[in-house]
Length: 233
Image (cartoon, rainbow, N blue to C red):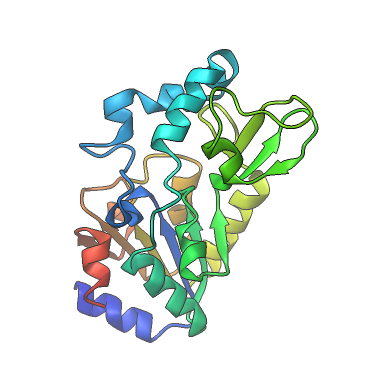
């Protein structure tokens, strides 16, 4: 069992759900988080991207955020485009992503659950006004709204809860899927990692360069870079 099996499952299904992590976007030039050369290992990003750091060392938070999280010039890669095409063919029900880069939407996917938020949505913590990504990207120091309030990225920081409605939706899609494809994620972070546990079918696929905690629950494991695997589909 391998790529040929995955091809058969995809071609024979009209109820596919994809759940992806940082490995989906590395082919677009966006570094992963926990890999060998990931942001967390280089900079202790888990600390810097935490709610506590945002509140107590706000300017340092934004210096890091602007330098390492705002890949607004990144282009979708073959994974994003392939999934968008599956949706257009009415085979893919939704994309669930841990990424905040917005590349699935750029590729043309319409049904995307961004469970960790998106760099393209920001809001004033004082008045609630929405702001685009350029407001933060083109700022220095702490970006502020016209009212004087701090503009916060609408992304889930460490120490913040995920949106429960979004998680419930993700679990519901996974539960109802015929084929569940999980790619580019180590499945180490909960509650998102529990999405695999919601799946009730017999065609769960994990594609990752390294072993994951969910491999033992999968019906098919393909070891490799997801962009390279998708080139063969």
